[in-house]
Structure formats: structure tokens, C-alpha cells
Length: 335
Image 1 (cartoon, rainbow, N blue to C red):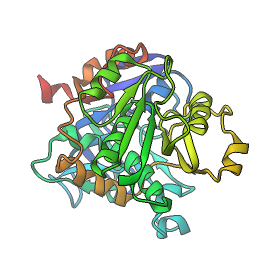
Image 2 (cartoon, one colour):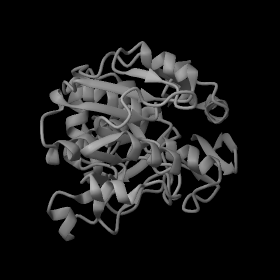
Image 3 (cartoon, rainbow, N blue to C red):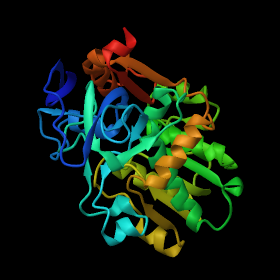
Image 4 (tube, rainbow, N blue to C red):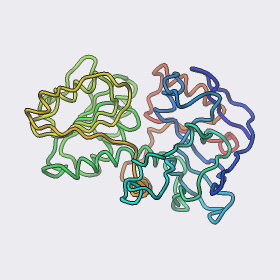
């Protein structure tokens, strides 16, 4: 089969690879669409010691199952494989399972004609659902999970809250779209890339600004700050931007530098939430939101053939992409 392989730092090679080798309980899926995640870029930059080349990356995927009880069905993959029997799995917090695995990390991923996955990690999608929309179920679930955690502890509904999103990548844009769908009273979004700001402006889901030049428009008065970057700089901005009694939702994982103002967090009773991935319930809710077009028409997604994946990674690396998300499709589905 053809596959896009991470072969070295900032090197992605499109080449022939062996067919997937299913483990016990696995099925094989013909890939219809697979999206590039920020963690794939992290590996591409050589910043993820868990992803060792040569490796097929990619975990945001939909396709058609070719064996097992779901053979012939169009499905989305929940790429987070868990034990299913620990306390966290049984209490609905499978994302915290200490034995979790992820395709495209140690196991071969979905930037290929086919991918193997545990059968219990398949989620059915409507027969007429666009595979491009379905392929971004996983990042949508990440954004939805972060916002659901905020709603669980918020002192008033989102419709009365002023929100700030830091970062206009896929998670940041999807967070803004989810906030809009849930009726947030005001949404501001900081993004350094001018191309992305222009693309986000077309979605009419947030008021954008350039954090290199400007401060958040309502500094110190945000009920909720979603840090979808996760750097020392954005953690500092989060603390400056949030109002007393507000919530900082930390989603991104760019670095582990400082930035949190523990004094302000303590004296002003600011809540800081950590977020990791999503649950199966978040994935199912995301499929529904995407299928019903509650997040818009998704025309901001950039679709390219798998063979052009190396150029896609290079374009993302050099900031030449307006789209918050690039989705790759096997060449035979496009040509």
C-alpha cells in the first residue's frame, strides 16, 4: 500500500509500505480521509520522543471497515485505545486510562491507504456524511471536551460569558465554533498568522486580533480563557486576561515553561483546568455536531492528496497555510 512516512526530522516520505498487521481484536480500515494534527507536526519537528521514525503518523481518520462485524460500514476511529477495565475507564473518563495507546505514536497511523485499529474503537457515521467532515471528529471532540469541562464548573451559562481563545489552529478555531454554537456572549481569538486570521474572520465565529501587536481587547475581564497553544507566553497572557473568579482552560501542549501567575490564581480564585483528549461520548457528540453542520460548512479545511503530504507538512511548518486544518485523502479517491 502507499503511505506517508515520517522518516526523519522535517522529512516526510510518500512510499510503498507493507499492509497493516492487525493485533488480536483489530480490524483493518480503508482510509477515506485523515487530517494532520498539531501532534503530527510536533513529531515532524523532532520534538516528540515517543514518535520514532520511520513511522506512519496520523490519527484523525474516517474510512470503510473491510473485515470484522462492521465490514462495509463507514466509521470514524477513536484513536485513543484504553484498557476498558480500570477505574477511569469504568467511570467514563477513559481518556485518563494509564494504559492508553494512540495510533500514529507507537503504532502505525492513518496516513496510508489502510490502517489497523481495535474493533471497539470504531464509531459509526451516517451513510451520507462527508468523509472530510468526519475526519475532524477527533479534534472537534478535543475542543468540545475542554468546553464541557468549563460548563461543568461555570458559575453562569456560556450565553452570559465573555470568552478568549488563544491560538487559531484547528483546536482553537473549533473551540470558537463550538462556543458560538453554544451561544457564548462574546468570543475573541488571538492568532499570530495573518492568513489564518483572515480565514477565521470568514467564519464569523470570533473577533480576531494579532497577539504580536495587540493585547486581548478585554484584558482582565474574560470569564473563560481557552489556551489552545500551551506555551509559557500564552499561559502568562491567560493569567493577565482572566477576570477574578474566572476559568483558564489549558488545552495546548507546546512547551512546559512557566507562565502561570500563582499569586493571581490564588488571590482571585481563578480556576485552572487541564484537558486531555476526549471521551467516547465527546466523539459521538462531535459526529452529531459536524453532521448537522452546527459548526458551519467547514469550507476552511484544505484537502490534498496523500502523495502531497510532504509538501503539506512543509507548508504548515513555514506558515504558508491559511486553513486551520489540512486533510489528506488517498490519491485514488481524488485522482
